[in-house]
Image (cartoon, rainbow, N blue to C red; front, side, top):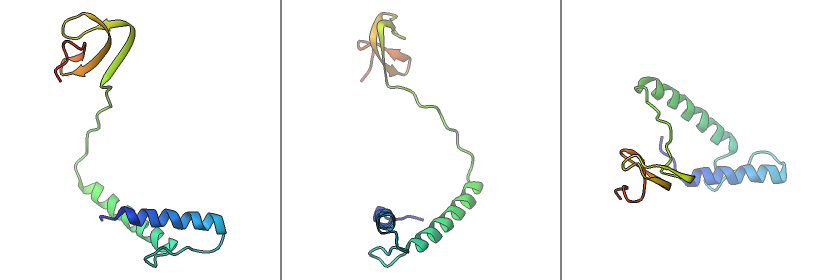
Length: 101
């Protein structure tokens, strides 16, 4: 279910009001209470779980750096020259001269 960011902002403001005042449920500008938001979140969680079961499994690849700085230098993956700063390219970490921008 698509939701507006304003809905989350209103929910967050309501939470802050509860902490500051310490009184019952807060109501946002649209007339929704914290209990409404909790019920909506539970419904969204149920829908997400059901749709996740039907979707194919996703492969997660680990993050890679885009640039490397090595004091004293390290070999460029293309030319083999030592460089302190190397950038990720198709061949691996390469020096400035070998990097295709």
